[in-house]
Image: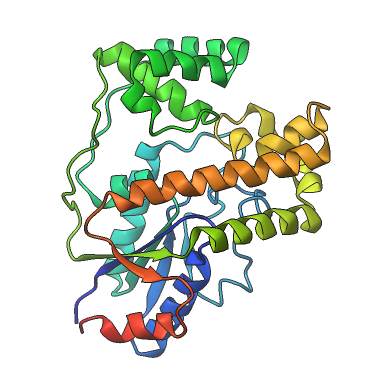
Length: 305
């Protein structure tokens, strides 16, 4: 009996987490135990629950989840570190005869985990200088610099993603160039099967708006206020997450609550478009309608034994 690596891709609010749990439950019930490996860069942070739509223990349905709540909010989650942790979790599952189910909303993270993917070096001095410039000038000005120097790199980075902007500028400074294309689609892990969830744009937009409204109703502002006391503002990655960045601006008096909600909705919609654009580039992903009834049962039955 083979132990494949199953990968479930899709934009935020497409239903990946729920489907992954159901699929893992179906496989386990059929005598093929499965566990979920998280590939979302924000679910790794302890305490970032509401704004990341982190599945609760009840929503995890008894399925083991790896790489959730492994960092504090003032720590940095790099793609390179995530690659190492995720590959170790996948190898551990397979060693125990458990099917790993990689669930990701970040195409870059999934690509780095499953494919031959090496990272350019880093220089602490250059990184520190760029981060000081980020604090002094802001992400928008550094993004404009990136657009001027490497528009092909800027095209794949959201203007508010300060961490990736700084990293791109660092690579440009250290290497003198930016590879317009990521490494080819070449699996570094054996027996990978990838699926993607899709649904009409209007429906996805509605889900995103409903999710953001629910986050506010569930206490996102209070969550961010508590995390700020634990060092959220000092976290280069966590503090700039969608929703958290807007609530921090709200707490600082820079946005009204209505403005913070609207910016979170519009920013999440833009992010979802970016996610889909990245995933669509991978020809190995088989796309499935997110709302199809019995999808978990169907996928479980189609896996080879």
